[in-house]
Amino acid sequence: MSENAIRNRFLELCKHLQDKKQLLQFRIEQFDSEIEQLTVEPGGNNETVQGWHVANFRYRGMIYIERLPGEKLALLALMIRAWLDEHDDTRAKYNLDHPKIETVALGDGLKDVLIAAEFVDEVFVVPTEGGPVEWFGETFDAGVYPVDYAESGEVNGAPV
Image 1 (cartoon, rainbow, N blue to C red):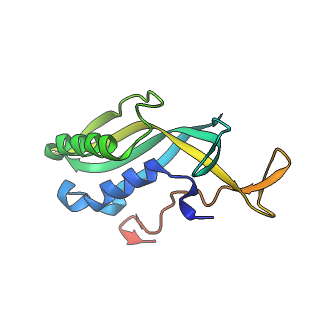
Image 2 (tube, one colour):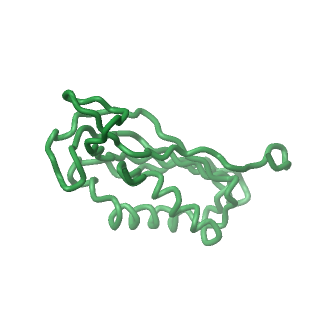
Image 3 (tube, helix red, strand yellow):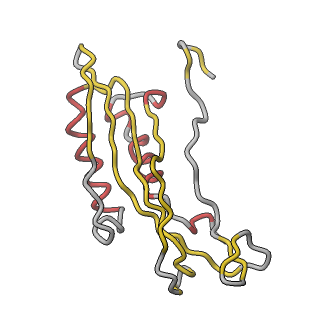
């Protein structure tokens, strides 16, 4: 089963913004993200070319950027909107709310930025002998669902 069995649109958006860190003028250690309020909804239980649509993962993706230059806030907002319009094919189908951006002014033109956006990732499974998911008397595999975790960072100016 392919690792892309469950498409994580939030992780894709995070990677996109991290790739734009120089343009937005932040360092990777100023960027954090997490998934909140994951709900596992029933899927259509119909067979598709991707497998059986068994569930939808509905969640809120939270992105936090520390000390973003204030003049980059509009560019960040436009990048998010454009990426969602082009890459998130579930927004209209599931009537997802628009992203919300909150800021805290830090002085010297810097802002801490908190972005909240809703996502739905459709989950498809395929029959797999000995697969970990038992469903209607058969075993299935859903592939790997990526989980965000920090690979590096700083604490009090020292790398960890």
